[in-house]
Amino acid sequence: MYDKVFENSDLFNIIINLCINNIELQLNNIELKLIYCTKLINNNKKIIFNTKRLNNSHRLYNNFPLYTNYKLF
Image (cartoon, rainbow, N blue to C red):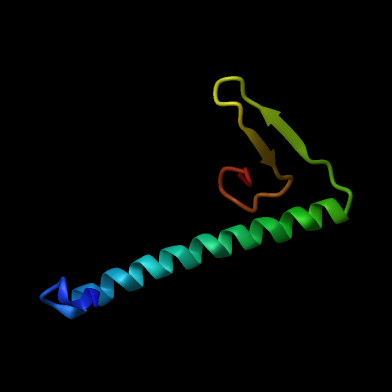
C-alpha cells in the first residue's frame, strides 16, 4: 500500500528497514536495562537515586561501566 507513495520501492524498503532496526535496538536496550536492574536488585547491590530539581527526574546510576555515561536511564 505504502509502496505506491515512493517511485522507487527500494528506497521505501531501505527506510522501513532502518525504522525497524532502530525500534529493535531500542527494545534491546530496554531489555538489557531491565535484566541489569533485576540482577542488581537480586544481588542486593546499592542503587543510588539522584533527583534533579529542574526537571524532577530520577536517574539510576550503576556501579559498573555498562554504558559510556555510567547511567542506566
